[in-house]
Image: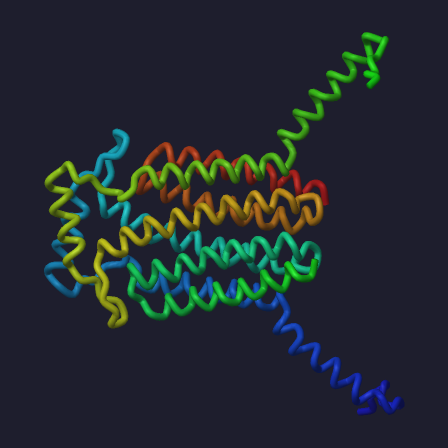
Length: 167
Length: 167
C-alpha cells in the first residue's frame, strides 16, 4: 500500500508525530478522567462482590446478624434496625459510587469546552477519593480498595492541575 | 446623581411584570433547579450526619449490640475488619459522597448554558442515582430522607427535560 503523504521527505517525521497523538490521548485529561471513571466502576464491583456484607461461616456472625435484625433502632420517632441501616448503606454506597463513575465519564467530554470548571470538579472528586482512601485504610482494611481510591485521587488531582493551568 | 423615573405609569407596571417574569423565569430555569437540587442534597447530608454515630448509647440492648459488632470479625478476601467498622465507615463515607454530589451539582449549574446536552445527561444520571437512593431510603431508612430525595429527583428530572428541550 502506498501512503499518500509519503512523497514529502518530512512525512516520516509527521507520521511519527501523529503516532504520538495516540500516546497524547492516553495522557490527556479526557483519557485520565475516563480512566478514573473505570476505576470507580471497578471499586463498585469490588464493593458489591462482598454482598450482603456478612461472613456466614461462623456461629458468632450468624448470631450477630440475627441480633442486628431484631434490635429496634428509633430515630426521630421512626423505627428501623441496625441491620437495615447496615445493609441499606452497603447498597447506597454502591449506587453513589456508580453515579460518580458515570458522571466522570460524561464530564470528560467537557474538559475541552470548560477546562476550569471540569478541573474544579476533578479536584473535588479527587478530595473525595483521598478521604475515601483514609476511610478504607482506617475502617474497611481492604487493601485493594485503599490502593484504587488512592490512584483515583492522584490521577484526578493531576488532571485538575493540568486543566486549571490551561485557563 | 440623576435618577431616571418613568413618567408613564403603564411602563412601571410593564417593568414590574417583566421583573416578575424574569424572577419566576430564573426560579424555574435549569440553573436554579440544579442549584435547588444541590441545596437539597446538602440538607440530606446534614440530615444524615444528625444521626451520627448512628446508634444510641441510652438503650442497653443497642450498647450490647454495638459492642458485639465491634468484636465480631468480618472476613473479606483474607482481610480482617469488624461489622462496626464497616457500618461506621460507610456512614461517614456516605456523608462525603453526598457532599461531593451537592458540590458537583452546584458547579454543573454554571455549565448549563455552555453545554446543555451534556449537563442534561449528567443531571439525568444523578436523578436516576438518587431515585435508587430514594427507594433504598424508603425501604431501609427514614421517610423524611426519602421525601427529600424524591423532591431532589423531581427537580433534577425537570432540569434535564428543560435542558434537552433547549438543544
